[in-house]
Length: 185
Image (cartoon, rainbow, N blue to C red):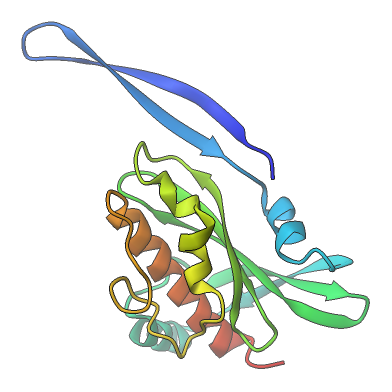
């Protein structure tokens, strides 16, 4: 896994007193979708892209079951294969943290259980702890049948509440979408 820092931005805002306040905003891109695929399915020999599109009725069902609407009705999913054997799927998505997008990828087994979660890019100034393996590992083994909610089966990180909540909501939507569109293979 490589760490690719995005240059720190200096934002100057005029204070009421006529002075300037310098604020540092840190953002980082940690890995690409392709790198996350290889990390989450090291045994895969190929990743085949598949488009999954839900119709309006399925989108309503998804919103009801996942507890909120999907950002899109179409997902680009990659099948992870080792020869002809289906190892699982990788779904890349993005959610808003507090102000900025958080890009992440979810690996699913053929049965729709969460195998792994990777944070691809984190642009917020606080809450980067969502990248910590112990927090991301809470999702492993869960599926659309799990609660997948902060305070229920997923623990929060103090100082990263919005990031934790929104990533968890996104993963729950992916788990439900996978159950609806991919089903057990």
